Amino acid sequence: MSDSKDWFPKTRVAQLTMAKNWVIILNVNAVTWNIAMTVVTDLETRTDAADAALTAAQNEDTRTPVATARCREAFDVLEESMRDVKKRYFFVPPLTEADFVSLGLKVPDSTATPSGTPTAQVTLENFLVGRHELGVRIVYVTGSPHDAANKGYRIWYSVVAHGETAPADPDELRNSFFTKRKKDVIEFDFGDSGKTAYFAVQIENDGKKGPWGPLVSALIP
Image (cartoon, rainbow, N blue to C red):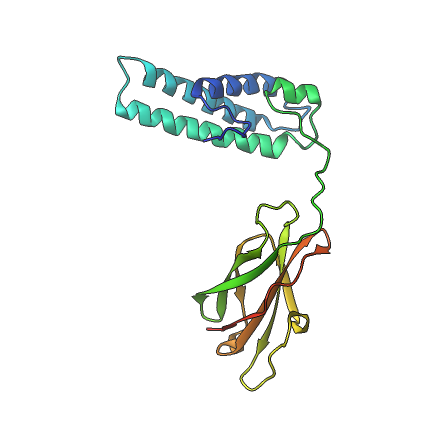
């Protein structure tokens, strides 16, 4: 279900009104917007199903727990379809401002919001996943995960066998990968089991790097 900041209407009547409007507009513009008619037909079918389900759920003679459940399911399916159409077709090719207004959508803001250089510091917690695999979870040491500058995380690591010299600081780590996830999995070589992995993380944002997080280690299962 949509929240107060979402484009999708909050009430079923408003959702149905928007869906019916989309069907009318898409039937006219499908070819121009490179949308297959099967997509329009599918949306129209789901709109009709939601309309019928809402009528049954509101009618005194047919209003039963089953009808209410079917209505909820029909609107869930309709919302899924509308979100999919919006995501897949409304930006390729770009619609005009008038098109967005006709669809009941907010005109996209094409002005990029400057996000700056990352300043937050993060580290890793690890958890077991499977043989020669380690799960890693990003933990903020300083700063906020909601800062717009925190676009992703460069996770650096090295694998050290027993008796080898461990890295003294993050600059000595040799391998890395970038992820936007706060929770990820690293798969090591089969022969790395029993060795120690050392990690450190930097936040990255379009080539701009934040400060190093602390050096941490974990035994590879």
